[in-house]
Image 1 (cartoon, one colour):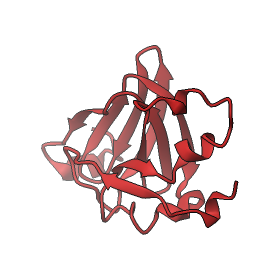
Image 2: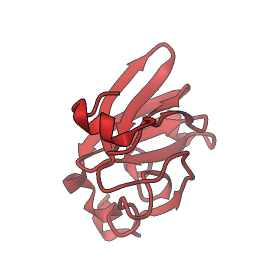
Image 3: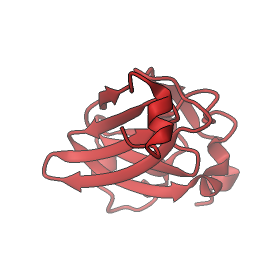
Length: 145
C-alpha cells in the first residue's frame, strides 16, 4: 500500500503546559517498566512528558516526516494527536500488528526542532514542567537548570 498517495495526515493539536518555541527540542527518550518518558526543552523551559501505557514509539528526524509539516510545525505546537495518516496507519498495513487494531490505541506526535517521536499509547500523556526562575541563568549554565 502506498500511503504517499493516500489522504494527508489528520492531526489535533494538544494543549501543553508550556508553549512551543523555535528552540523546542527532544532531549532524550527513555523506556522502562513505568512507560515512555520524553525529556523536552526550549530556551525558556524544560518538561518531561510521560506515556504510562505505551505500545510502541519511534524517533525520526523531522526531515523524514515532511507530510506533517503543514500541520505540525513548532508554530502550531509541539504535541499532536494523529487521528489518521500516521505511523499507526502505516503499521496497520501489516496483518500481524494486533495492538493497532484496538480502538483504544491512540497515536501522538511529539515535535522537536530536529527529532520527532511517534507514540502509540492507551492513555493521554502526563506532563512535568520546570520553568527556571531566571531564564538567563539557564543559558549561562549551558541549558541545564
